[in-house]
Each structure stands twice: as structure tokens, then as C-alpha cells.
Image 1: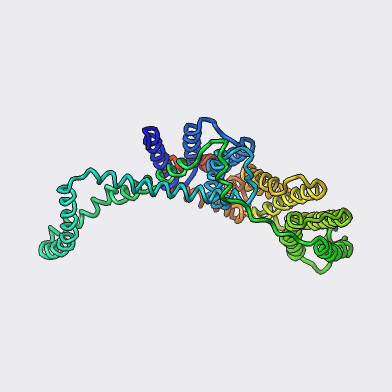
Image 2: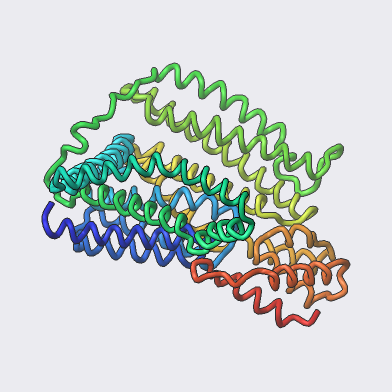
Length: 484
């Protein structure tokens, strides 16, 4: 431990205090952005821009900031829960990546092993540091001092039970004394002493965790020992003829299914005997089938089948391509059926997410089609990047706003809208209800819902800075100004 390390320990404890203040007091809002700002200020100060793998590192950093920003600008309950888990994982992935040598294969399974190794070493470092520091503190203690502390501890163990018994007897003997003693817990709780102790311990633990992880991360470009100990196991090889047989069987069924059901796939009207719900659900079963079966087969065959014979290799590529094309037909069919379902029953967050996910799958299958014929392309490398962009993008665009706007447009066309669903959404849904009130103030039960929400907001206590949210502040101000 050098002097700079001790100073950095104080910085990490300060970062631990910032984390405790940001995440363990009120509902998380702008505090997530504040913490991310402080965290990356420490990262920049620690490594002084000596980063590696900068392109993917920059994409990760932008994505992290976008996801953290959603806590300040949106209030989507689904993404709030997911991001509480994903952002810390992405941050750890990012700092390990930018401190690993250039050319690190971050899309390989070995990198996951490296992440686990770094995390384990960071915790071990913190534990060892704590043990050594504890020993050093008590190493300089004289025997007399140690004996005094020991006797005090023994006296507390014996005396506290006696104190409780005697206090109880005296309380029963004198009511005035009893009233005084009963006020002591209220006084202690008013001081928040116990809470302060626990919060101090939490700050210490978080600070030590940050300190340990930063201490085991290095930005040297030479050492490769991190991966030399974490070599991947040799991949299994599947037989090319077996793969072709499986693909021919599957593609035969898919092509026949597409031909027979062609009208069913692309007809904008309902087939006789089907409701909208049945029509849409059948499409989602096909989508699940595509994603779980076809995509899994493509990935496993592309990675595991190694065929040297040229003719058989061409046949495999043709079969792969046919599987991609038929999967695209099914995705298009599912997309159209869901659109028809939304026209009849309205837009929800789940349905818009399903639309977005199908578009994502179309992009994935399109890239996979290119990868079939250009073997040098890295498939998992692209999947990770496009997955990261997709997830950050759906967080940034504000899906609830899209749901609300589409439902309002549908109301203007059909006169139908589910105000109870909009009320179920976050503050964005409440904003949509106020838009509807301005369009049609006489809509049944709408005014009462807005009055109830206004009373609910008026009854809420003033939240701290940690919980500040742009959408909530905007909607609250608008609701207070609305003439009900």
C-alpha cells in the first residue's frame, strides 16, 4: 500500500457514500445519473484515459448513460426493474473491457470467465485488505489496553441482561420512571443512531468493493495472463450430412406450411371462424417457434458444423438461407397479425414491445443471412452490439409515449380508448389522460380518474433530490394547472 493507494481508498469510500445516498434513501430518479457521473469521474481519474478497446467501450459507455438517464426522464416500471440489474453488469463489463489488452475477444465465452475472475479477485483483495488493516490497527495496542477492552466487553455481556431485568422491576414500581424510560427509545429512534450505523457499514462495504475491483484492474497492453488461464474448450463438431438431413426435413415442412397458409399469412382480413385474439395468438406461437427452434438451429450449425467438401458446403448454405427466408415469412406474418389485433383492441406496452422485438429479430436474421455466405464475419460479435443498441434504443425512445400517442390517434379515428390501461401506466399515461381530457372533457369517468390522481399526488410528501424525474415534474405541474 502506497500513499496514492490510501488516497484512492478515501476516494472509493466517497464513491460508496455517493452510492448509498443515490440508491438507498428515496425512489431512484436523477440520482442514478449523479452516481454514474461520479463513478466515471473516478474511472477517468484512476486510469487517465489509458483505455483499450475504445470503439466497443464507447458504445457501452453511451448505452450506460442512456439507461441511467431513463431514471431521470422516464418512469417505465418494466425497464426500471430490468435496468437495476443490467446497468451494474454493463458497467462492470465496461471497466474490465477498457482495462484489458487491445484485441481482447470480448464476444467469446472466455471473457465471461475473465469477468468472474476479476470480480472474485476484487472481493478477495478487499477481504485481505480489511484483515491486514484490522491486524495493523490492533498490532500496536499494548497488552494492558487489550485487557481493558476485553474486560469492558465481558462487563457489557454480563451487565446488559442485568440492566434490562432491573429496569423492568423499577418501571413496575414507579409509573413516572416508567414514562421516562419509555421515552428513551423514541429519543434514540429520533437520532436514527441504529440506522446511521447500518448506513455507515453499507458505505464501508460498497467503498471497499469498489476499491478491491479497481485495484485488480490494470491498463497494461502487454500481459495476456488473464486469458492464458481461461482458454476456451475446443468446440464440438457436427457432421455435415447429418446437418443437411435435419435442415431438409425442417425446410420441407416450413415451405409446405408457408404455401398452404400463404393467404392466412398475408391476408389483411380475418379468416372465417377466427377471432382477433385467436388470430394474433397463433402468430405468436409461430414467432416463438421461429426464435427458439430456427434461430437456435442456425447458430448451433453455423458454429459447430465444419464441412470441407465444397458441394456439401454449398448445400448447407442453401439450406441455411432457406431457413432464414422462411423464418422471415413467419415474422412478417406475426407482425401483420399483431397490427390487426392492435387496430381492434388498442395499443399496450407489451404489444409495442413485441413489435420492436420482431423488428430486432428481422435485423438478426438479415445479418445471419449475410454471415452464411461471408464466413469471416463474427456472428456473436454482431449479436452483442445490435442487442446493446436495440435495448438502449427502446429505453431512449420512450415506449410508453408511443403507446399513449397511438391510442389517442386510434381514439380520434374510432372513438375507442382504454382509459383504465392508460391510468395503469406511469406518469406518461397520466399525461395521455390529460391530452384526452382536453380533446373530450366529457369522456365517461375520465374526470374522476384525474381528480383521484390529483388528490393522490397532493397527498404525497415532497420527495428528495434523489427521486427527481422530469416526466413526473412535468405531469404534476400540468395536472395542478388543469381545470377540473
